[in-house]
Length: 320
Ligand SMILES: C[S@@+](CC[C@H](N)C(=O)[O-])C[C@H]1O[C@@H](n2cnc3c(N)ncnc32)[C@H](O)[C@@H]1O
Image (cartoon, rainbow, N blue to C red; front, top):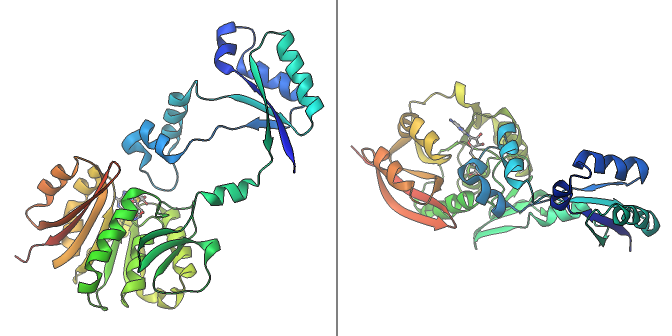
């Protein structure tokens, strides 16, 4: 078994001691002691949500300012963990730290397959006995009970509470829908919700997003789910080019932030057929009140689901 020998410099103590800056420490470890690299800190999704709240709920790519925000808030939680693959080299750097009175800790780590480790974050997600989300590498054969997704590209791996809740609510009405019912996935990200609809209904889906990369990812996921033959019937549309069709949709998904749901209220409403269902999410607990108020003239609440801090609403367009 391969090991990494790690010397973890206590960066907080280092900055208090005023002896070396972080940059100087990097230079010493890399140039003078030939460290192979520095372990980056990693944090789980829950901690990111805790720090960024609503801002964590973006498309596939985090904007630069959100990254910066995260980095600022994580100051002090980072560690200067330099590593080597032989113990003697790590010991030399540790001796230097000791001599210079730099606080540190020594560790050895199993050299993991980081690709494998990343994959461990994406396990299948069971929505019900009739629907689950499976990462692409676990696909065996195509079937109507599994939505296959290339994880990590567009928002919508099924891991996020809001995606899960939308799928759960969709499952509640699927029996009521006709196979010919068309669907609109507004803010489609990876396309996960619309693809779930395609697996259950035999009709077509319009996928809309403001982000061209999300639409690219959505197309890949459509192909992964073997829907390329239907492609002429699906539309993948950039939001700027989206226009409400004469015939509105019996089922619409809109898993987007509260402010976007308010901004896009008119187009979402006009896109939903009378008596049709609109599944809304992207709402933190408490935000549903404002949304229900904004949509109350045209929609009635059928059911609400909550998971963690997030809420999803199943609403139905009033027939008047
Ligand atoms: C939270 S993700 C949801 C993705 C996927 N539908 C799911 O449920 O997992 C929201 C998506 O909405 C897109 N979006 C944001 N504002 C939008 C707008 N005004 N119109 C359409 N899409 C928008 C984002 O680019 C992002 O892909």
